Length: 319
Image 1 (cartoon, rainbow, N blue to C red):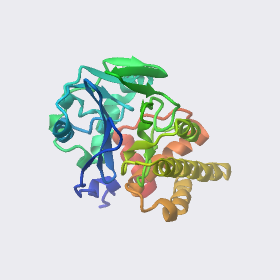
Image 2 (image 1 turned 30 degrees about the vertical axis):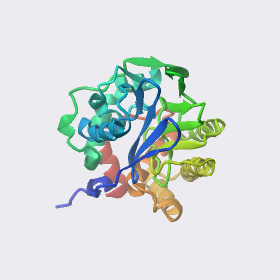
Image 3 (image 1 turned 45 degrees about the vertical axis):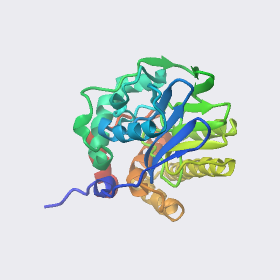
Image 4 (image 1 turned 90 degrees about the vertical axis):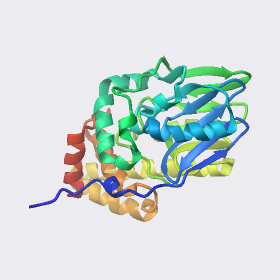
């Protein structure tokens, strides 16, 4: 009897060490050695949290850290995109408003339920106390297109859509007064970008649009907070290089008439020496190459991942 090869992430059970650090006058980073990050803005009269953690039980730790530095109300939760690991903890903050781009809202309508089932199945450690998640989806209470500005007292906070990349709904949080950026999963640092719902052709240009803001500090979606312009440039360049390398390798394979399996094996072998030490490399690569192959062949928009499709794809490429 053959055994099903499990997702790389199902064997990933090691607890990560959390760091909570101030990166500019009003911004804080909650990071965990390559696990999903949360960015926090403490304004004059309120707190904004970008990306919630995967469950209310996990988000409670973020709230605890916030309460060590301020007692201002947490009024705003921003969803930088729709992935379950980023949004399902929202209930813990009891925010007045949950903000997202209209594109993110549309993705929740279209594929939120399937994505939730798929992500929880793929990566159980990231959903601690999953029973603490309220039934249903995390719904934005307010959406915008392109740009929205919040004023936390005198502090200006911009929510910006600077292009598609990790998803079509990607939103960044920008503090123009202190040139601090919360990028969501558009930028990763020493962590492999997950690109299963990505737009490979658009992502590099979107990163150039982020770079044009000239951030002095940045909270990436995964990895350590970047606290100098040099580190920020490194984070942007690393993410851009990975996306471009996957795309170039996949395009070459498609042009040569190779099937997904062959393209995956070639691309994995080509990228492993350069990026293999990045967190979740083995987990992300099958999803990333499958999406890239789709985009390079016949699917301009990402297909919906379901728990069944996940398993089928994993068997095809890793079985």
